[in-house]
Length: 363
Ligand SMILES: Nc1ncnc2c1ncn2[C@@H]1O[C@H](COP(=O)(O)OP(=O)(O)OP(=O)(O)O)[C@@H](O)[C@H]1O
Image (tube, rainbow, N blue to C red; front, top):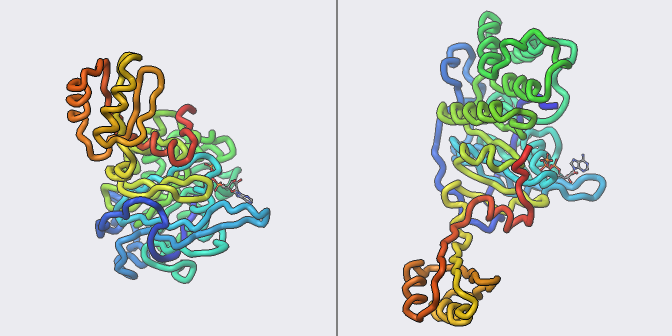
């Protein structure tokens, strides 16, 4: 079950990822939630610490379990401050294990991580209160209501004011649509309700960084939309968010940055708009069977490499050649041009190409 927790972190450089580096990060902003700043003492350590532009940075982070399985292999994550980082990958690709290492819930076999510019676990005491997290693991008392669970957690947080506790908890419950279910015992919660309570707990106090592992797990489409909305709202208020999912379509729209895991490796990372740029745009030419040979000759003559013929279609990487030049050359050579399409790489197609797996887009 999802459990609220606060997290630790670790530090250092860049990515072994074969992709363009991350852009200069926005220096932002502490993560106080709108309308809630006055309810709390300032987040411990806010505005202090390292000047790094990265809210999360790992260096060769590796986890090998006792079974011998390497679940995470030399992963170098870079999450700029202010980003919404979609941490994507199929089931079993190592997302949760990475997140658990980020939060100090499990120790790395090798490498390390920094959260908010601080090496962990050394800086846990100052960093953890600034980090909200939703990860798997036991957390809530099954026989207590959702509200009582939040009260316990809030009371355990030494930095919050008792006098504003009720208002804080009411706001968190309302924000996650749990007002009506607040009095119900946790053990009677559906998976989606448990997920919402985990999010409410993570948002009980202002955060500079939120780490959410599969926050839409168990939610219906409306709940999923609400989580997206919430992530966007938090990011607008300056909170850096790392959100994991095996469902690309669920979070793609809210992400400013993307990291894709495959079999324990971070195979792609970068800003959302440019992350697919390094992958080739292809042209798909449809012609009559008699003209396939001459069409291939024209494409090769233009410098398009290794055109692939399948039936009456020919697919080739465009490279720097403008598509108009392709169509003009084909027509000029007398090729029957029945169709010409340019396929720019979608994130999903890049994912499939890199991992050999498809996203599970159905619930
Ligand atoms: N405690 C453990 N002991 C041994 N192997 C583990 C342990 N925890 C995870 N693994 C293995 O490590 C690999 C990565 O698992 P992980 O949970 O990190 O993947 P994930 O990307 O989060 O998947 P999902 O989307 O299904 O949660 C899997 O093969 C998993 O079986």
